[in-house]
Image 1 (cartoon, rainbow, N blue to C red):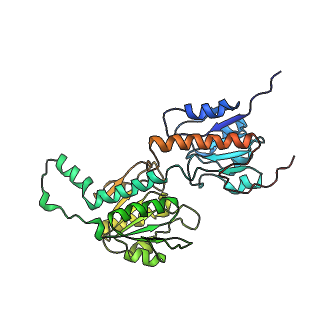
Image 2: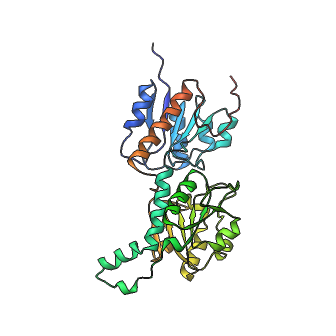
Length: 325
């Protein structure tokens, strides 16, 4: 009797099909099963893990809880289809000897492009005047636009994406400030403390990951410390910013505008953001392009195969305990 093939469970996915994942996973001799495309709540994911007892889990945005991690005795790897690990119980996986991986290199150009594109939309009035013209108003004399070269742009978080963003901003001639826990020396970038970054930036681009330490890093007090009329662009994680405090700062005019690709409780959009004319929203798509999605899906799936074949992953984000038994 032929032994059943080990199962790989993909919790959710933000693309039309699973052909790439299926080609890599099933091509290596494993069985692929899928949850709903839209991220399901933790309890539903836990039930599916208990049902399928996978050896590997691929997850996009759905939560892989500590309970889910413990429900499959066969589990060897939880692979994030993305960069951030805030939807995975990494500590529990580590304790149980399970690898956690991500794909850190796949979309830094796209996210940097998106952040600079959002900033340009504000400085050149693209979103505002598109709406005005479509509403039948042709009033160029009302334009109050800015030259990017004359602005100071702060980058909060300086990893691969932050560096790419800085390089693009250097091409426009902007003064670029950056805050990171490990300051560097780099041409075209001034590394400064967080309070100086907030105080001097005409625009702030958020690239910092979400951790317990960075949740609501931009709270009411820090938003109040920013330059009056500053623009905030967030392409990182929504919870880095206190949403209610941001809405208050936008309503008062202290913050001049916000461009958000991520929200605290997405896909739920607060009414306060929807009603403000100085807010631009996109549905967590900064990472997306034809090239980046192909790389993301292929590389994450290959990590699962690598671990199930007894090899170490290329992008392990933890140091799993030695498995017992």
